[in-house]
Amino acid sequence: MATKIRLQRGGRKGYAVYRIVIADARAPRDGKFTEKIGTYNPNTNPATVDLNFDRALYWVETGAQPTDTVRNILKNEGVYLMKHLRGGVKKGAFDEAAAQKKFDAWKADKQKGFDAVAADVAKAKKEAVAKELEAEKKVNEAIAKKVAEKKAAAAAAKAEAEAAKAAEEAAAEAAEAPAETPAEA
Picture (cartoon, rainbow, N blue to C red):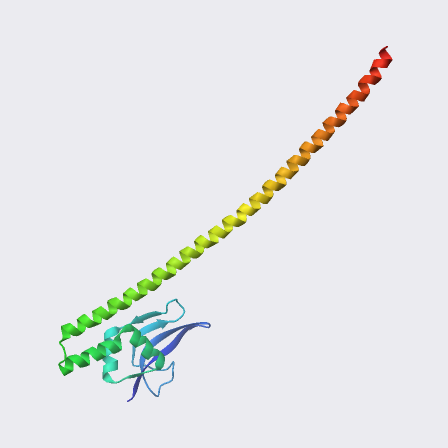
């Protein structure tokens, strides 16, 4: 029986979530399967993979053929590297402890890369927020300047109107005062 490691679709419309399964090559995509070895969610950033590493390694060593997508998932999880290292142990190139040490070093290096990318993304977000805040401050300053100019113009107009009103009142009082003086005399 030819076995394949493939994805089996699940989830709702527009939000596919996949199970990584071992199935007969002749079985339909969402049909019967031998064993479920993990899940794959491409909707998250980065894509989430939950894999039973030991069972995946067993099936790859047994000869199950993965689909292209599953092969990429298994490579990213290190299944093919471990298969390669176990081949070196069988040939006598190094022992099991050295193989595990190499795998752990690869896994740590990969995690360090993920952490660096996550740090860069966080830094970029922080810079974008700071840049947006700075732009907003500039806009607010411009608005405050316009409001201050408008208030100053309104205050000047009000002061000018009051000065004109005071001048009119003074002129009216001056006109009334001479008119009263001749009447008294």
